[in-house]
Image 1 (cartoon, one colour):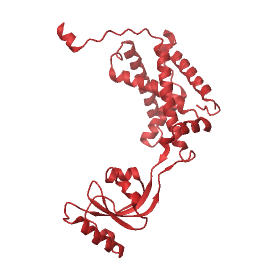
Image 2 (cartoon, helix red, strand yellow; image 1 turned 90 degrees about the vertical axis):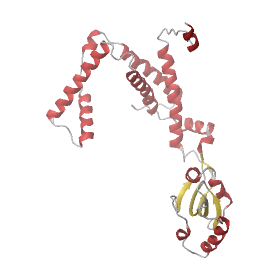
Image 3 (cartoon, rainbow, N blue to C red; image 1 turned 180 degrees about the vertical axis):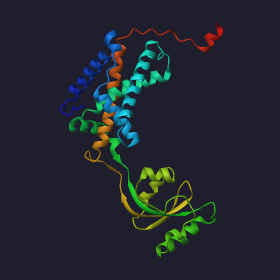
Image 4 (cartoon, rainbow, N blue to C red; image 1 turned 60 degrees about the vertical axis):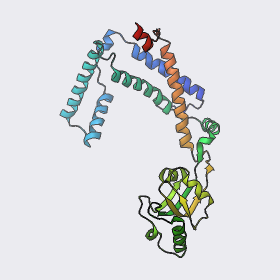
Length: 283
């Protein structure tokens, strides 16, 4: 489905609403004769063949393809008979799968729309805080295990002197599970690895120099930052794909709500007055 030629969002979602009505009518329509017809189209056969090929890395042979078709017909017959017998009623798994398929229908319709950049730009401007890029760092770290060192501050001073003199940093580090060097890593990722707000200590450090000790959730660290990119507001062109994804998620929820309200209007809904557990106990 290609709706790229439609640029006005109001027209786009009016179109989606019309599609939902048509699809709903198709499912509700049809007489007894229609319900007894099972038509296996060439598209359906190709779909069955494609599924087989993805699983076996080869197309099905004639007998295998016929077996796929026969199995599909068997499944369709038994499914329709099960529905006639009401076996789908009060089945939580079936109900949830049907709900998901209805919601996927609305989602697919929204995904087919490519909104104009001015629509996405308006969404971007209204949600500007979502598109602030965190600071990013490339750095090395030498770990000092405070559980095993009695004079961490003095040890840190001595090791800093050795590092400044050019001694191998990895030979001076206590054993730990963290990497020695991190390349272009975000401040958010750093805080997940080292502990909350660890990266805030980087703001006071000079690039290219060994500094510390900095305290993490594990102990103390001597750190040398070789590259730092400050936190900044991303340009729309940098995050357009993210904006499109976020915009689609919002519009999907709007369409789902409209779909639900439209379909709900077809039903007369009666809800019993809830009874508390205390009231049940008194009966």
